[in-house]
Amino acid sequence: MSGMYKLVSCTINGKKVEKMVDVRASLTDMLRNDYSLTSVKKGCEVGECGACNVLINGEAFNSCIYLAVWAEGKDILTLEGLMSPDGELSDIQQAFIDESAIQCGFCTPGFIMTAVEILNAKKLYTDDELKKLLSGHLCRCTGYENILRAVKKTMYRRLGKEIDF
Image 1 (cartoon, rainbow, N blue to C red):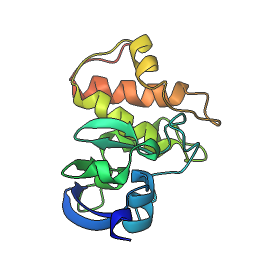
Image 2: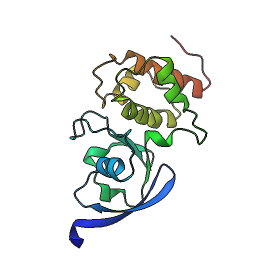
Image 3: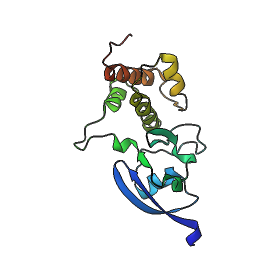
Image 4: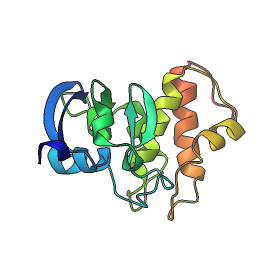
């Protein structure tokens, strides 16, 4: 039995945690089952749809194809970690609401986590670049335009620039 489980110590949404995990478990499973972080969705489970996307040391990863044991010593951020302690939404979450970029909501957390990585780069991306950066996500409801607009508006606001649309 001892060979099947491993102690994983990491930081999740700013909190240091430690857990015995099955060495075969995905990071998605650990986050959902052990920490009740249900924003991390189980979609395709092969790294194609982006619904399970989280930031690991600031970089977006599909947690379904990332083993939980690889999280050792890492800093993991999920959608739950974006909200301020007083319950206020982050600017990108609010932008998704303002732009009606949410329909069923299943893909939304993954999109937002990728958007966080994009916005943290503090660069002004073109529409084509933004589309490419968001292309690892599948959405069956929105047609993507509102999602793109939400990310673009937040990017312009954060950079203190006038929006050109």
